[in-house]
Image 1 (cartoon, helix red, strand yellow):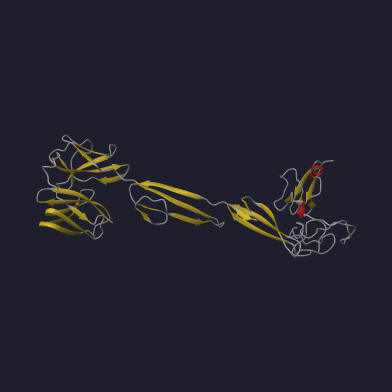
Image 2 (cartoon, helix red, strand yellow; image 1 turned 60 degrees about the vertical axis):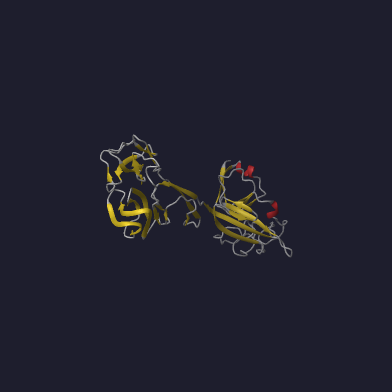
Amino acid sequence: NQGSLHVEGNLMIYNAMSNIGSQGTITSSGYNLIGDPLQSSWIHPTDIINPSFSYIPMGALADNGGVGLSRAPLPGNLAINLGNPQDTSLPFNRSIVGRRRDIGAVETNDSSLISISTISACDSVYIGGQWYSQTGYVIDTIPSQQNSDSVHITFISSVNQSFHKVDSISDCMPITWIDNVVYRASTSTPSVTYTAASGCDSTIQLFFTREYLDTTLIVSAQYIVTNEPSANVQWYYCDSNFTPVPNSSSQPFTPPSPGFYAAVLDVNGCIDTSECIQWPPVGLNEHENTGITVYPNPASESVLISSREGITQVEVISANGSTLLTKKTVDSEQTQINVQHLPKGLYILLISTENTIEAHRLTIQ
């Protein structure tokens, strides 16, 4: 006859499950000690399956109380104190001993050698010399030189996963990351750690690549061209207050007249400005190096400009060509300008000397 068998709190370690399972279906409400279950579909999370026989020592048939003879769990048996904690009904032979009833019909009078704990883990947990990454239980024997060995059962109720994520960013401008820090140079060291509700830490690491445009200009007797052939370009007069050259958004660029020119380059939203360059080019014997220096650069408060030739005028030009500051001098080899009122960014310094005009990029930070 086919039927169904419902089990809870039973010792089934010595039974032939093949004989039981062949007669119908089996369901479990947990707290069973089971030998080979043949299939796991009916097993409850609180069931212990396939334990070593060394963990289930049983006494011989004896009068353990109750009606008839029975076999009682011996010290160290996993059945001791591992029954359903909500089941307060009387066992076969006596009242419940210890914190909770034993698995099986017979209640032993020894409850001192079994301990139980329930834990949750992040990724994995180390128990008894091994790592465990799945829910279940771990049986650990604690040797004793004075008494019988004790047994500890650890139930792993949940294993929550943490993660490590890499946030890869490439940009030509400084970025403000999720830690509210501004990063101006390439870096891979910053990280932020989050603690989830489960208590597991997860980490996000920044990989920031600061990209720079090549603002080199190549000049010939016929034209000027940038070293970024795919860039959108606007050309400017350096010696006319950095005003745009009309109809000059292509390259190669043929200047309308001799003078100093610069290019503002735009590649996918990354914008930078070249140095000013003279066209048509002059030979080294036709133009003496003025030795102009700008210090400090980047700057935040003031800039000292030095030249071997007398400086006659200094202009600060914004990226869009607006003149923000003009300072005239009388053939001085040094002059200082105050820049602390200027917003952070990139500017052009047009420095006029007795014989030439030079453009230098200045960063305000």
